Image 1 (cartoon, one colour):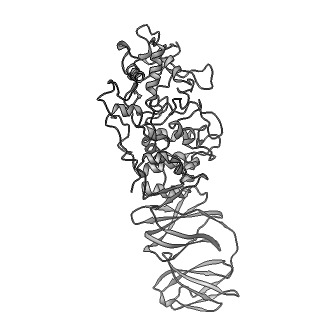
Image 2: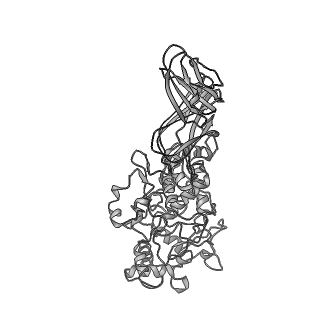
Image 3: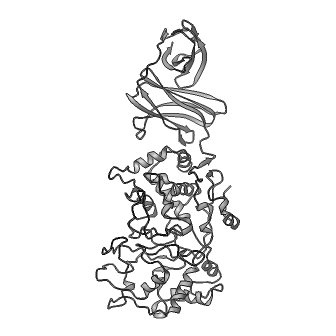
Length: 556
């Protein structure tokens, strides 16, 4: 069952905003959200449509502070839901409290525009590409690979070690081999899902046939402002719609800069490359005040400042990239609209009608983590209940042991080894039980570990190609074990044990890692090996202190 937002959910958002739980069998309906029929622009690529699972993963990534090098900031730190997914400061602060280069723009309705490039200067060719560029940025989230900072590969290894990402990436992509492209696609799906079409403007637009007709739910001042916005200068308007196209109110993809060429926190420096803006929807909160400063440098703090800018464009000779529509005609002296104060206030009143309601509190776009930063995934895609997983040294070898309480569709376990917990290598495979609700014991002997520290993890695989990783364990090679002898080897009938004083537990394990037989033995006792088929077996011997070792035995 998919969740749908209701007005009741918005009113009661305080009960849901800090849930800390995602049920993979009960996801929000991101992919089938209602879009008004008058909204026609959409920059969603064919290769990355919005899906419930993908947007859910993107939501977790968007709010997760693990995406910064010191776990202090997330995407949501600079793009806040209560501020239309923008920021209320001129520039934001990165992971080390250093200021970012530009103002953090609002993300609402990022999907609904003809412009496919992103960032103020359009340096990202798509929302997918844009989504991880702040992660790479040395100031913003820090995975730059510069000045001893880790790079994106380190982030991927970090995420692969987090349980909820093991569940989510497996659910969305079928396995847990995380790639940057998968991160990009999921983040882009979530951002594109953030939409706002329940404003006063939308109520009026649904009642008329076009943008130019008077809206019956508007005041006279709001309709005047709408007329000024829509009409060109030669028809008594302010020509706003030429660059900010209604009803999406997105930026025209052929726009150049708007005459604001200053650089945040850098007096005297200029930047003529800022040619993109976010949608004009949801610039105000419900009481009519701006969510935050405007423009790429956050230099304008009121809407009247913005209207005054366009009312009288000041052409700077150093600005080589001013939009032609703001040049002011053949003389190039800058646009001069000569708006009256009444007209300016009417424009402000109209722009306030573009603010929606539900997007600010809707749970599907809220922080999924609980107050302590924890997240639980229900109904994970690989229901193999791992009771324990442990490793121990056996002479110069390493013994891996694990137990499952139940298995569903379990093909088996790939054994992975690493010397640094980053670069992993497959060193073996142990067949699973398929469908089995009983307890199953498994072992694997690594006969070629490195001297020093060794890392191990299990990659559980089902018959449908899905995978899931266990936690990572380590073992240092260098600890002495007790001495035993197991003979004859090869064996045909009875296997004898030469053991120190004390009682020992013996387990017979086949080459696939399944425990076939257990018993207690003392020095000199025998075990009937004729009950087993010909082949290779492992004899696991454990003393009363829990020390273990493995002997490889061939049954003739």
